[in-house]
Image (cartoon, rainbow, N blue to C red):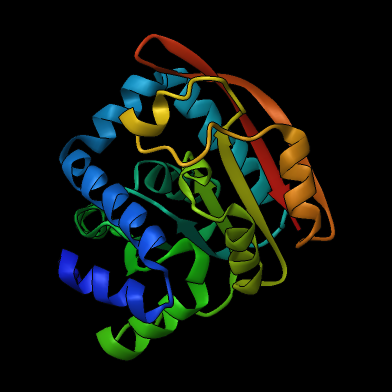
Length: 243
C-alpha cells in the first residue's frame, strides 16, 4: 500500500485539491522524501533526549486520563513514527493495550512506520476519514473509522488548512475521544518557510483556542516549557488537548 509520487498526485486531485495547493503539497512530500532515511536523527537533533522523553510523557499522561485499558490511537502526519513508537512503548509499559495507526502522505515515511510495527495509512490530514476508507477499500486494510486518541506531533504548522485538519480529526474521534497536538509556538523566523517547508510560523495559544473552539467543546492549550533548536534558533513548544 506504499504509493509512488504519481499516485499521490492523482489521489490529491481526486480529493479536490486545487493546483496551487497541490503544488505546495507535492513540494512538501518531495522535501520529506529526502528527509525520510534520516528523519529520526533529525528529530533527535531538534530536541534533546530529555526533551523527547518529557514530550512523550506529556502525551501519554493525557491518554492515561481516559482510564481505558485498551485504546485505538491514530498519529496524524506521523512521519517516520519516531514519536508514535515512543508513545506506544510507554503506554505498553503502563499496562495499556494499544492499536496504533500512522497517517502520512509521504511514501517513504509509510515504509518506516510499517518497519516499526505501526499500521501505515497513506492519506491527507484534511481528509482523514476519506483516507481511511480508501485504505480499507483499495488496500485491504481494516483500519477503524473511530479512535480513542488522535495525536499530531510537530506537524500542525505544516498543514495548509489547520482548522480543516481539526475538523477532520474531530470526525474520526470516538464519543469520549480526545485529540492531542504538540507543535511550535508562533515565532518570527520566516526563513523556515523555505528552508523547512513550513506553511505557518507556528501558532499562538490564542490562535489555537480560536481555531479549536470552532470545532471542539473544550480546549486546553498551554506552553510546555520545552524548545526545539533549528540551525541555532530556539523555538518554544505547546501542547493542546481538544475534547
